Amino acid sequence: MISFVGAGKVGTALGVYFKQKGCHIAGYYSRTYQHAIAASRLTHSEAFTTIEDLLQRSSMVWITVTDDALETVANEIAEMDIPPHVKAFIHTSGVHSSEILSSIHKKGFATYSLHPLMAFGTVDESVEQLRDAYFSVESVTNSSPEGKEKSIIDNLFATIGNKTLTINSDKKELYHCAATVLSNYMVTLLNVAYEMFEESGMSKSEIKKATAPLLRSTLMNVEAHDKMSDALTGPIKRGDKTTVVKHLEALGKYMPSKTALYRELGKETMEMIDDERLKDMLCD
Image 1 (cartoon, helix red, strand yellow):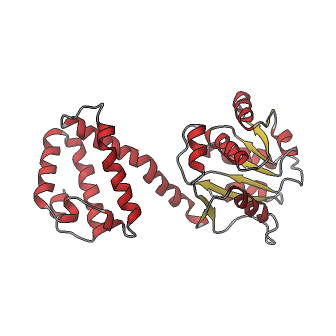
Image 2 (cartoon, rainbow, N blue to C red; image 1 turned 180 degrees about the horizontal axis):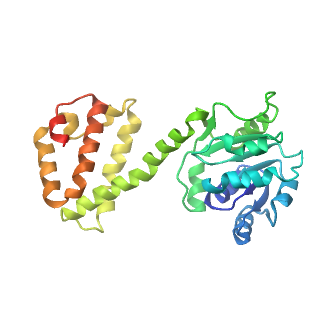
Image 3 (spheres, rainbow, N blue to C red; image 1 turned 90 degrees about the horizontal axis):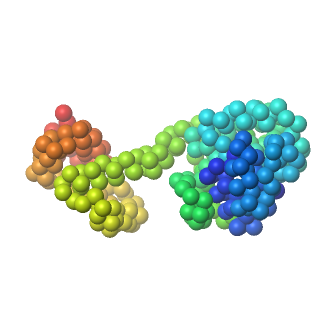
């Protein structure tokens, strides 16, 4: 039986997804009881009023609380009388390794870090996206040397069918940084581009729809090529100095606060294609 300590977006979506895949969901505990009730209704499971009660019904416990609360919750659980039928404790943080559950592991229980590599939105959207999501697994885990408890993790992925990717346990922070750059900062970069489009005179209401084909074709190019540089188009790839000069002049005149970002992105692009023909223009 799978249970969740934490009934936010991640825990709720995982519970619904696991249930759809044929897993048995025991239920949820949340410091906000109404959240546990809402998640339990979606999974036809129980809303627990204490973690102790949840443990009595569980063989696998997913700790899906915020990163900042994770160690505190783990330490609270470690102080409890954990029943032996609980085979594994799992957290879903992208930045923390399984080491943050060390207080539980020291009591003789297997602990894991399994991070779904995706951005969570609404429950329905997230459940749909989970079908194609990879889960990151650490190269070194706190499972027992005999590996007996590991079978519960293997059985889970055999049931849900998701693929896994292995990352270095001691570089978990770098892994999460990469995910943040890809997800969060892509949104930031899109916002910067949209501001430029708007400043150029394009109607704000048209920008997203008008630029969607450009975004899709860019992602298609990335998927179609093994080397990122082969997916690149534009003036830096072509070595087109005149165009870069015009870009810098326009930014200096209309949006000077964006000039530094343009220069830094240009320098990163030159490193990617190993070409410094435009370096003199992009360096301050």
